[in-house]
Image 1: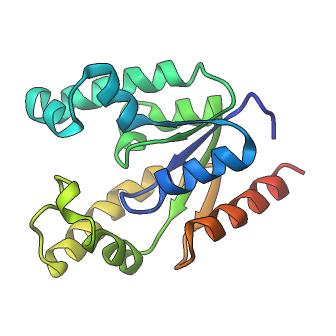
Image 2: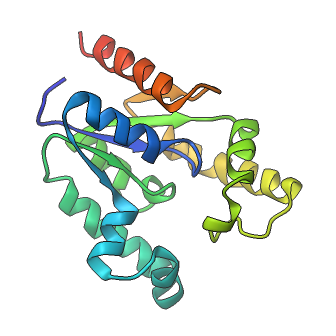
Length: 177
């Protein structure tokens, strides 16, 4: 694996992109970029506020411009927003400028993880467990068309983030030999 190559983590919300990304960056001695944090710092607004002000189309355009900027960086682990791969040519751009890793979690795992995190996430706030399951199933089906174009598809299991990271590093190293 080339040190200059960026690693892009893609996947549905709750799949562990930020948590695993931070650990992965530390283990590989790379910088870590959470795209949502990057956007919030650049625009000095929350993602929710940007969505409210500019709508989804406006937000996706901002997200695309930020990805173009980040794709010129080197040696970074990038945690993307869950929807980012599904718009413009974002998945192509990430595949061209780095290694994309789909953190693939099944619906049951995502429901378990997101049930505890609903208040922080505007798209799922206030949903019952059944509504959450239906929402995830419907959206994941659409998004997987994009996620499955990743260089590496990494099955997320009910393991600690540290264990996930160790397995992912093994997979990265074995993929590049």
